[in-house]
Image (cartoon, rainbow, N blue to C red):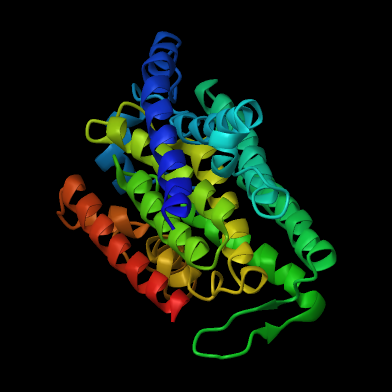
Length: 350
């Protein structure tokens, strides 16, 4: 058991240290070349100016760099590669710590890397003075990668069912497993807009991946658990520098990478791993679910009732609009995120 525990804590610690070491170099580059939005303000989902949101945050849009997600995914990839190299050079000492494996981590790491690259391209568009890659193009990319991953599960891993809360047996979906996988990926990706307050997204994603590290660990999927732990380490390094005032934003290169990796990990820790990774995803990722739900409610209110339900969407900005300081919103989200992760982890193991 000591060895298995070390397989979790070593990648987490190493990713944290690498992330902390990378940040000064990254921020020097980001500030030297002014890698932030060139124009303050955002537009609402209906294309009109997001007046209330801009009143709250437009002053921070310019002057704070994007690309903070590089700290997270770069520290994870460097940790994985370093441990793999050490395992080859010193197999007697490090072989058990390497967590790159075809059966468990190739697919989530590939999804993370693809998301990171496209998100990076989107951030480059934004700092170049453009609006970024169009939303429908990003959604199409997420859907395409999810479709490829779903096919891999269905055809190569022979997975066509998912767990359902409070049901003893998995629900057989057959070929419908593929579109279900894609819909889950799109939903979780939409929750990435939680990256709206200093420290908020980093803390939430850290609790989510901590829960999945526990789920994978207790079902013997040690490589997945190590990958999740490395993600937590990289996220904590990011949060260290994202405490108000934020040194940089997670931005699209971070949120796209993390949400795509999360979806694959959730499915790998479900029927494939003998766990309940998918059925507890709405609980473990409750802050992301609430973020998407608040956007849906706001759109439906405008379309069906002709008025807004919330002062502003997503939900975390609504709390700001009614008078909560940003730090209070962040800290309370962290509390809710930790409680949700504990509940989800518990349900996954019973």
